[in-house]
Length: 524
Image (cartoon, rainbow, N blue to C red; front, side, top):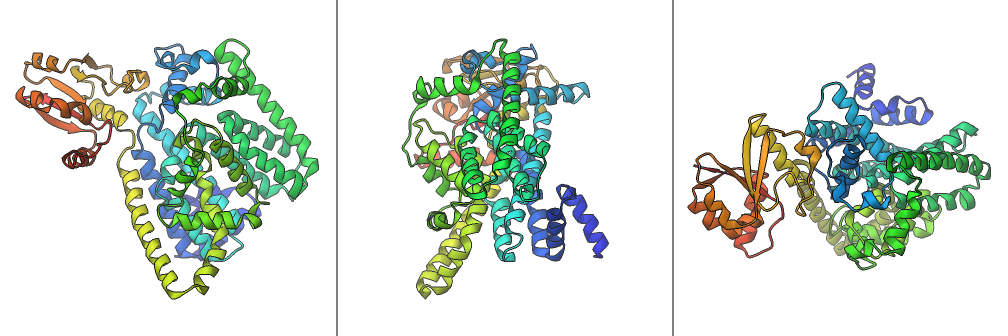
């Protein structure tokens, strides 16, 4: 391939490199000179696209109800927002709701109305943006060091089992993550080149947007503030950044007022309600070390992550001046001190863990080269175990939809494709949560499907008409399988054939099965 052809190819594959800055020119040169990096980046973007297409549904109900259903509420149409307590307690910042409302209205205006397709396109957009931001961070911080360290960081960034999935999520955690770290990257690139007042104002404004996406990202911002004050000593930058942050803060207060129809300071109501009023604690409390254990399971997978974690702690004497390391440590410590913990709360720092690992690799490599032979053999075996486990989990996350309930409702919508049909369900149906909160946004895409619910399993016996459809989850129907079989119902579709078979295997071994794996029955 000619140099011109290779460059054109890079322009096509990596459009984010077209921004004019010497750093981007340097990155293009590095990529052009190393075929291995090209393969990693092309493989990473392909995996990111596949994951974005298959990652249907959501990781947490808050991602759906407090954004998408809130958006329907804002638009004055039927919605499920009233089924969550946050709507009446004014604890949800609304900027992300406004963004989705704008996106949804734009899609509807051009005739792109299918809810599943709308969210697929949104996941693709998010995946590409986050892919660009976090890979650019890898190049920014490692392009001047050993090439193999950069390669390892890019491998971790693009092929750690859970990271491509997190980059598809239109949730507050990930939106705050990309806004915060993207802004920090932009500032770090230009901070020593006498940035102007307007640029610094914009940096502060973007930090405030990140804060309003997810208030807890403020803990990481404290780390950046410490870095600016005590290590970089960019005192002249502080005032314009603070003014920009204030402008963003005022704008968000006004947006919340327009949404809730009264003046409210959502950062205050959020922390007062969840922390001081202990509303969050009512949903359960966990040990201080829960997030430490979670990070150990992600960096990148057990068991080699234990070694990475040890060296990340050991390197703190060198990295405490680093804004990413400092912000990440403060973020994890602050979250660990709060009683109520959920895995998604720690999502914002997941995609910078490969950077932290990269900074520790020289020390780890030095230890490996100078340790005993049997220790090197043990570490090599542990590494291969981690690679195999990570690859298996990566394939699962890329090709098996996490949101099985939404996946099943999508399959039903495609199967009946506008054809009027009545579907009976035992308990929960595919257009609602286990607690019976309706997912109105998805149901709007299937007006032809009528759901009839009954709670008594014996009610199945009244379904005597041929070609009657009936849905249930594995865990629900397994208790009444004999009744279903006796009535002549046959399975015609699962939310995932693989997971249904896995549940059958787990059940045969008397082990706990996976929740919300669905089946569609048809009466012969």
